[in-house]
Each structure stands twice: as structure tokens, then as C-alpha cells.
Image (cartoon, rainbow, N blue to C red; front, side, top):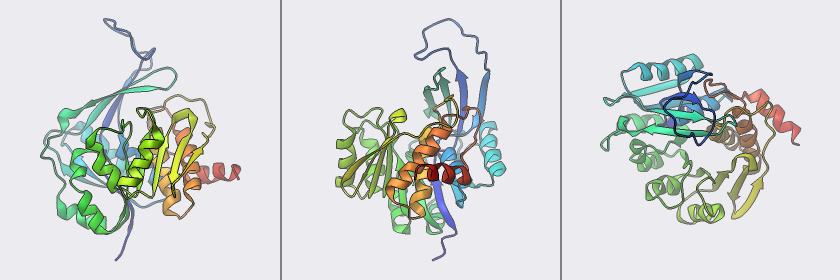
Length: 301
């Protein structure tokens, strides 16, 4: 069977409005003057993973629901600009959107507009099957429509990955994603015991690799029943924004994993790409290139 797509990214398309605030948490006030401006740009988790993978030379296709609205036009224009194939299923409720409050230290607080989805939202099975059967790998965003595709994706024969983001290890919504994926990413942010949650994912699911990102502390890699700490990479420039760092990590890890690098090497690539993303303002969509990634990785040898 021909696999002309390296990675199908399922879900996670949308727009963010970026607001740079003087501090987080933001104290109550009647108003704030935002000196750096308020910007709306295309790019949520699926978009950023797709951009990161494409910048590393992989053949990427992105599938999601998009509205016939200005926000959807921004997403379409971004994919066209970056040369990433996009299949957009009409979404009557409109394109997903969020507001990101960004503090001076680069930390962010994200506000998600969940009114742009409906419990009955579905991806057309024929479309999903056709694209999945043409793909080596599928990266699944934890959106409600994507949850219904997991059995179909598994039957298509592609390997799967997902990012559980700030899962607390308890919310049952995340469990189907966690237990069906071959590679699972998540953040340590809300986990009281990251190792326990990581091991539960491998014990109850099919994951051969679980990676928990820990920001400036690096990441933790669980594979072959062994937990390894991956040190953080030094950012190549001052940190300005952590938005998209986890997506950059996932893209670079998958680049290494799909190229049959060791999980440790793939995780190293992830830390390098994540550190690079922290130096890029959230109003921009610049991903690390393959040349930059490999050069930085060679310096670690």
C-alpha cells in the first residue's frame, strides 16, 4: 500500500488572539493599555505540529473542521503559504479560536472558546480512511471529533501519536487517546506524580513511548519500562514566549522517531525544537528547520 503522506495531522486547527499582559496572573483592573498590540493569527496545536513537521522536510496533510469565516481564511492562508496540504470539513459553528495572555517571562494563559464545536461533530469516515491509509503516521489532537476516529485510524494500519497537554491523569476524556496511541506526549504541569501516570499509560494502552515535557526542566522519557530524564536544551536566543513549545517538541520527536532514531535521540530533538520555539514571538509561526535541528543535535554528541 502506498504511503505518500508521512504524517496526517488530525484536528487542532484554529486561530489565537495574542495579548501581552504586564504580569500573570493578571490583577483585576477596569482596563489595561497593551503596548505590544493585540494580534490574531492562525495557529493552534494541530497547525503548529503540521508546521513543525513540514519545516523538517516531512510530507504532511492536515484534516480538520473549519468555518466559512475570516478565521478559517487565516488558517487556509497559513497552510497555503507553508505548502501544507489541508482538507477542511465545513464547520457551521465557525473556526475554533482562543485568546492567549502572555506574560513578560513568556508564560501564557490560554482561554478556549468551546462554542465552536458540537457533540455531534464528526469527520467523514471515508475521508479519514482514505487519508489514514495513505499515511505512515497519524498525529491526533484531543478534539471531540477526533475521538470518534480512533478505531478507524487503528484499522488503517498507521501508527498513532497524541498530545494530552496538561492532563491531570484523571479526566476520563483523555483516556481513549492515551491508550490507543503508540507515542503519547503530555505535560507534567498538572501531574502530581508524572511517572505513575506515564506507567499507567503503557500498562493500560499500547504506547511504546511516553514523553512528559517539563518546561525548563527538560522532559521525561518512558520506553522499554525505563524512565529517563532528558535535560533541557539551551534556547538559542532570549525566551519571549512558551506558546507552541510543546507542539514543536512533538514535531521534532516524531521526525526522529519516524526516521528510526532512538527514543533518546528523538527526545533530544524535541528539547532543541521546544527551546527554539520559546524564542519565537507568539505572533509568528516560525519553526526550526531540519538543518538547524541536526546542527544543534550534532553539538550534543
